[in-house]
Length: 299
Image 1 (cartoon, one colour):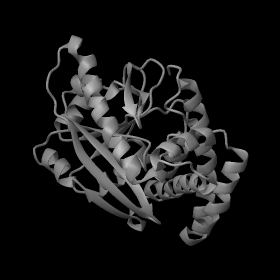
Image 2 (image 1 turned 90 degrees about the vertical axis):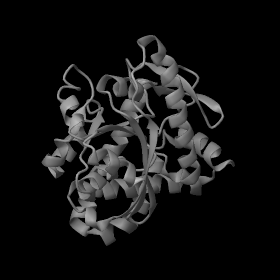
Image 3 (image 1 turned 180 degrees about the vertical axis):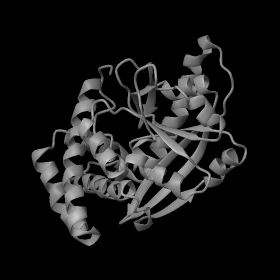
Image 4 (image 1 turned 45 degrees about the vertical axis):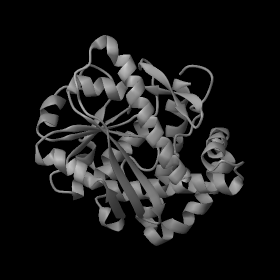
């Protein structure tokens, strides 16, 4: 399952990004918007291997059997966020209206020059949070990302905004955490996704919509290594060019004995999953984790 999600959804992203980039740069925002509908239809007709996973998720989030309009809306919302991601990478954040809730939590850490770990997900737009970081004075955001399986997307990001790409830290290898302690001690923010496992991850099962699903222990382990608290965040697409960001305290930093870390990871990640489920209910069409997290086989 791990290799499947690393290849399938990201390849789809590359396809979408190339089309949306060309349309947006050549036709502008108002031309791009209506063309997202046929692009979405193309994706669902010809690249629809992720539809069964989406249908299973929507059945749980909507608490009813989804129809084709629900699935279309989910993928169209995804397309909208990809278009807006292009504007973020092109330093055109002013095109977006972003309402932020819980910003005082971040500002409290920043005012005391204390860093923290932001744990996000594939619910909504991960990239928009970096726009918030750049537009809010004193908030710097670096992102831990798995880039090895997405060379096309990585190359596109670098071409669009080489400076922003410098804030992406590829996960994997001994150099991943080098220098992060100093960055965090200066009040920097480190963001990562907490809703997917990759090969080699320590993982655990949490209850998600009434069934057991696999989640990584990575957030808790990083918090212990870097000695920083964890914050939950989500950035929901709420309309054309509009987003709603929420920050919540997830877990404070306290040294944990190595033998106790699996139990603490279970507690923290279940809390994370509970909040993730809450926002999935709030904005069900924002779920862009296009694989079945409830599959019986281990990742």
